[in-house]
Image (tube, rainbow, N blue to C red):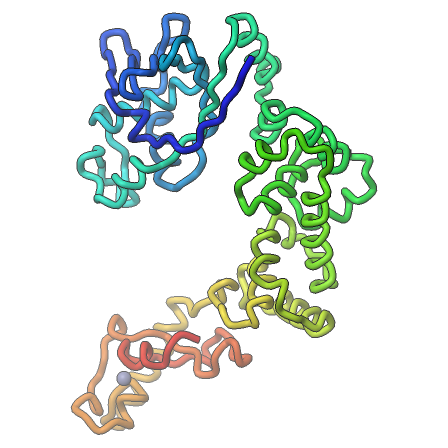
Length: 387
Ligand SMILES: [Zn+2]
């Protein structure tokens, strides 16, 4: 049995020449006539329920993977879909205007009515396809092993079976072995279970900078895994030396990416530690997971922390106070307009024309409560800039 991985075919390629037979409910052909989508032995198309078919298109638009597709090579330049016919048929039917999806405002969109960038995104999405070639019984046997009794293998387990060889065997001894005493330490930073290959998947993700399958295929017959393990150790050692703390929110962060971006910057671990503690205690920080990247980036990108904003009743109370004061004094209710020299000096803004501002910026210790709130006209609030 031979398998071959194709990663460069796009949805446009596969749906070229897509034919759907609505009498038989079958997607028939694609890939410029080379592909039979639903051969006789496959069940009919069952995704046309306005949910599963729509979900396939939503995933593509969100750039989520739609999973592996398996084709069997039946003759020179002739293929049949072994697994993936429902997904391919959904995509083909969408591209040929057979159903619509709803956008975030619940407006239906057929393919033709999508904005051009979304059309392009769909057409250019690359698919991951395994082509298998062998006798029918070989293919059936192989397909059985990748779908053990209805418990589908996850992506990494599948990759392990496709790229089985000395490299995967050695890597599994280290990363998929729940008796490895390091697993505990690693699990502080990595989500999932060793025996479901989640740690191995992460290690491969890191060393390959997201090109896991290429990495596995090019190292398939290697007898050592030293590049994989030394890169993995570097990332783990780096995280655990920069951050003395082990917080639950550290689990599953993109440590490989953060390592690439920040490992050449130096940090003082005790200074980092006190920043972590302070941000954890700060009730205005609503996104604790963002704390680590925020500190690594020199505490500049406050967006990562999703700092709490003023609520509507605080804004309204403050607005009413400022307006009453301003009217008594005959000046603008925007304090910055009031000290200016133009016509806005005496202008009274409506609530909708104003925004709430932190008098002392949050990053300088200012809190998100009414004592630290002032209403400014939108122009002045924007001019004060992003804090
Ligand atoms: Zn103003």
